[in-house]
Amino acid sequence: MQPHRPTIGSAIILSPMDITPPQLVAAFRNGEITFNGATRNAPESAWCAIVELSRQPLTQDEIAVLAAGPLEDLLAYHGRDFIDRIEKEARVYGSFRHLLGGVWPSSIEEEVWRRVEAIRGPAW
Image (cartoon, rainbow, N blue to C red; front, top):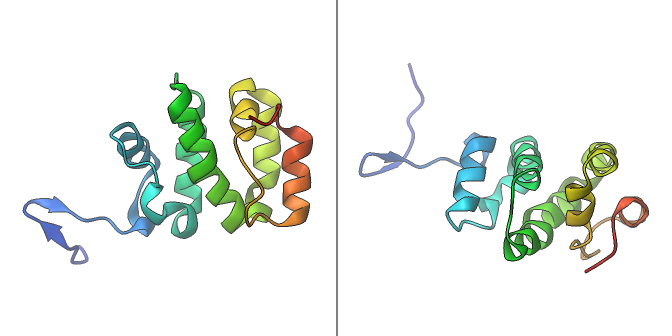
């Protein structure tokens, strides 16, 4: 038996815990730039979506929004859990290293932020 899920018309409303990376990527491409709480409540899905988007062609505005929104939020909420993967991604993909240049310290833990600064490209 499937759990009850709230709906609007025939559309199922997903909680951030239920959101998949492809859904986050599609939503971002359609203008939902906040990841609707997934960076806090579904960090693995958010991480996978951020990586996928960083490897796609993006406009400068999309890069800025992805850096200062979902990526910065992921680092603020779960930086310790993801910093090793973030460093690895930045070493392998210049586009991800560039993306980190748009992240600001905000509420990111100091040790995590030092590691971000060490691996990212120039701040922009």
